[in-house]
Amino acid sequence: MSTSILTPPIMRIGAEASRAMPEVLQQLSLQRPLIITGPVVEKYGYLERVTAPLESSGIRYGVFAGVTSDPTDDTVEEALAELSLADYDCVVGLGGGSPMDTAKMVSVMAISGGCVRDYAAPVDNRDAGLPIIAIPTTAGTGSEATRVTIITDTITDEKLLCIGRAFMPTAALIDYEMTLTMPFRLTADTGIDSITHAMEAYVSRKANPFSDALSLAAMQSLYANIRTVCQDPENGPAREAMMLGSTQAGMAFSNASVALVHGMSRPIGANFHVPHGLSNAMLLPAVTAFSVHSAESRYADCARQMGMVPAGTHDVVANRILIEELQRLNEDLRVPSPMEYGIDYQAYTDLMPAMAEQALASGSPANNPVIPDRDQIVELYKSVYASSTTVSPVQSLSCVSAV
Ligand SMILES: [Fe+2]
Image (cartoon, rainbow, N blue to C red; front, side):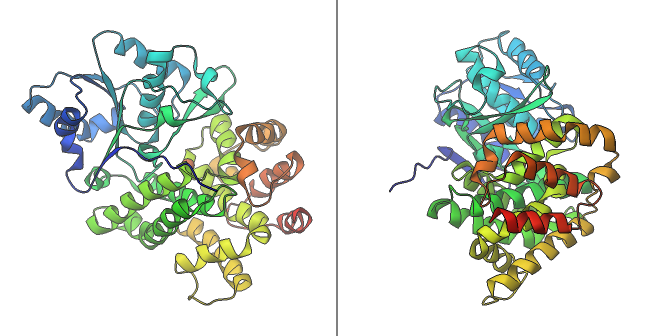
C-alpha cells in the first residue's frame, strides 16, 4: 500500500533564509506579493528584514498587518479586501501560525470565493489559490510545511480545521534568526505545540514510514532544546534546532495527522482564548496517559527518542516515565491548568459537552490510538481542569476501559 506525501516544493532553511524572497519570487515567476502579517512582527523588525531585499530588488509589494492571534473569518475578509486593491499575484504569510494560516485561506478564497466554513473539515480542499510563501517567526506551528489552516468562525466561536493540498505553501523560508527575540511564554507554548505535533504524528493511526522519520528527528531535537531556548533565548544553535524540529514536526503531522490532544485543544482555545500551544500543553500528559495502553511500543519509542529513558528500557517503564516527564516539562515551563489560567469552572463545565462534540467533529480524535467517545472526552476535560501536571485516577480508569 502506498502513502500520499505532500511537502512545499521550495524550502530554504537556515540563517538569512528570510532574505531570499526576491530569488524565490523569480524562481516562481511572481512579481507582486501581498505580505500578510501582524503588528508584533512589524514591531520586532522582522517585516523590514523581509521587505528590505524586495526594495533593493525593485519589487513592488503590499502589506496587510492586521492579523492578531487566533485569526477569524473577519480577519480573512479584511485581508481579501486589501488584496483586491492591487494586482497581487501571491500572498506571503509572515509570522506565527496566525498570519501563515490567514495567508493560506486568503490564497484559496481569492480564487474560489465563498466563506471560511465552506472549506472546513471534512472537505478535501484541492483547488489551488494564489501561490503561498510562508515565513515563520516562531518554532512553532509548522504551518509553513502543512496542508492545514485553522480559522475561527466568529458566529459560533469555533476553530475551523481546514485541510487539503490547496493550503500547502509553494515556498517556505525558514530562518531561525527570526525567533531569537521570542519571549519565554511564546517560546514555551510554541515549543510544546511542536513536541505535540511530533508525538501525535508518531502515534497517529495514519502514521507512515515517511512521517515516522520526521517525527522521531523532530521530537529528539525539540525536547533536547526546549528548556535551553526558554532560559537562554538568544542561544543560536538551540533556536536553530527548535526551528528545524518545528518544521519537521509540521511535515510529519501534515502527512500523518494530529490526534486527540489537538482535537480537544482547539475548543479550549476557541471558547476561552487560550493560546494554541498552551492548551495543548494543558492536555498532553493526561491524553498520553489515556491513550498509552493502545500504542505501548510507539509511546515508549517517544520516551526513548527524547532521551527520557535509556535505549533498551522496557516499554511499560518507558511509558510511566514518559507521562512523568511530560508533567515535569509542564512544571518547568510554568504551564497553568485551565483553573490557574482563570477559566471559570461553571462556564468550563457547561461547555464541556459542546467542546467534546467540536473535538469529535474535527476528525482528529479518530486518529488517536484510543478513539474516545463523547463521554470520555468530557471526563478528560474535567480531569485537567484543576491541574495540567497531575494525571488523575479517573483517567487511569478511562484508560483501562477504553483498551
Ligand atoms: Fe498545533
